[in-house]
Image (cartoon, rainbow, N blue to C red; front, side, top):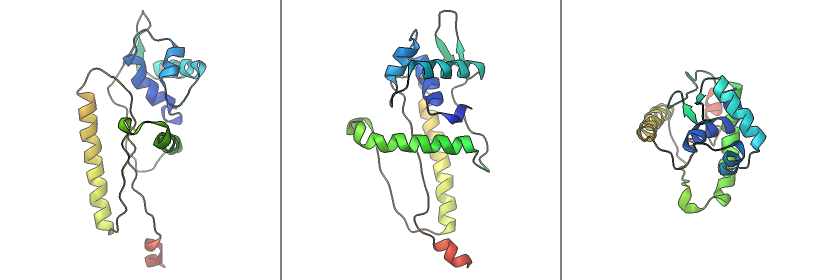
Length: 162
């Protein structure tokens, strides 16, 4: 359920950064728009799933600094859906977020299968480095999403098999 909505991971990061904030204030802080009712539902789910804890005053704290999908030998449907949602949000950010608040870059490369495997290993190492940087800080000023996509733009491997 955590991976079914972009709101869950965003609110898991945002709620602890806004002590005392009510669902409407959290909703207004989200990009793209989300309703206060959706925020309430998400917070309730995050507490029940033990991804957030709520104290007596109503402040939220993360139970763990990171959440992972676990081994990705196969991509669960919900994770694929979340990637799709986050990709759509990223596309909207190209025009909707000031350039000094976002970073977009890309490469188009001709590679071998061996190079592909090496690049995927580097991406995994890079993600671990990013997580280490983010989790070394205790405060949150803003919630960001980092999408890393690496996919074929041709069908040449299909031609080799036939």
